[in-house]
Image (cartoon, rainbow, N blue to C red; front, side, top):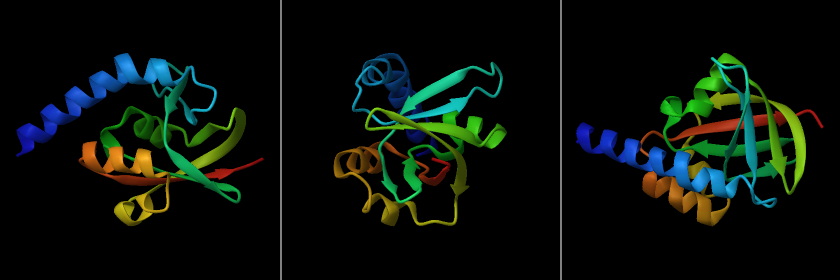
Length: 131
């Protein structure tokens, strides 16, 4: 089972990194989470699905701490989120104690279905927005 999960992770992340993300980053309507690369120090925009609730932005990572943007958050929790074409600064918090499957029911349906289907280690992230 572990081999299947690893193969699934590598296949999905390769597709996202080389095909889906470069295309969706260009869409003005796509929500982006921008972290700072933990090694390069460069801005790393990642298309995400989530929802703003007041001064918080919620999302669920498909692969938890295996995701590069999660590792970047662990190194530096200061992030930016592009919501409906406007950038917001904030601080990201990883919430392993949160029920990620229940959280997905409160987030956009299409993205949540993809995260549930493709993900193997769900992790909730809350971004406290400064503006």
